[in-house]
Image (tube, rainbow, N blue to C red; front, top):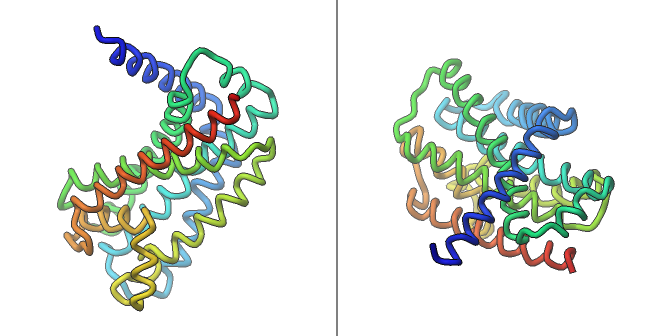
Length: 250
C-alpha cells in the first residue's frame, strides 16, 4: 500500500478516535445543550412568530439556525476545557498530524449537529405537514452545513485561552451577523444590491439556499453552486485550522 494512503488512513483513524472521545464527554454538557438547542429555538420563535410565511420557508430557516449553533458548540467548549486540564497539550504532542486533530474535533460537532438537524426535521415534517422533495439535496445540506460550521467552531477554538466564554464571545461576533446577512431572517431577494453582495460571502447563505431547495425547489444559486461553495469553505476552514494549531504545537 502506498505511503500516502497509509498516512491518510492513519489520520482518519486518529480523527475518529478524537471525535468519539468528544462525543462521550461533551454531548450532554449543559452549556452545549443550551447553546445548541435552547438558543436556536428562541431565535426561531423570534423569526417565526407574527410572520405570514409558508412552512417551506419556516423549516429551512429553523434548520439553518439549528445547524449553525449546534455545529459550532462542541469545539469551542471542548478545546478550551482540555487546555485547562492540559489534555489538549498531550494531544498536540501525540504522534498524529494536526490535520487529524482538526478533523476529529470537527467531526464530533458535525455528527452532533446532523443528529439534531434530523430530529428537528422529523418534528417539523410532522407539525408543519410538508415533505422533502429532493432527499439528496437535503442530506448534502445537512451534512455539509454541519461539517463546515463545526470546522469554523474548531477554527475559532484555536484562540489560545482556557476560558470557554472568550471563544464563544468571539464566535458570536461572526455567528449572529451571519444569520442576518444570509437570507434566514431577511429574504435575499428583498435585500438591496449591497446586501446581496455581502450575502454572497457567507457560507450560511448557500447552506440555507441548498436546504430550501430540498423542500420547495426554490434556489438563488443552484444546488451545484451551493455544494461547491460549502466544500470550498470547508477546505479553507480545515487548512486555516491546521495552520493555526500547528503554531500551538510549535
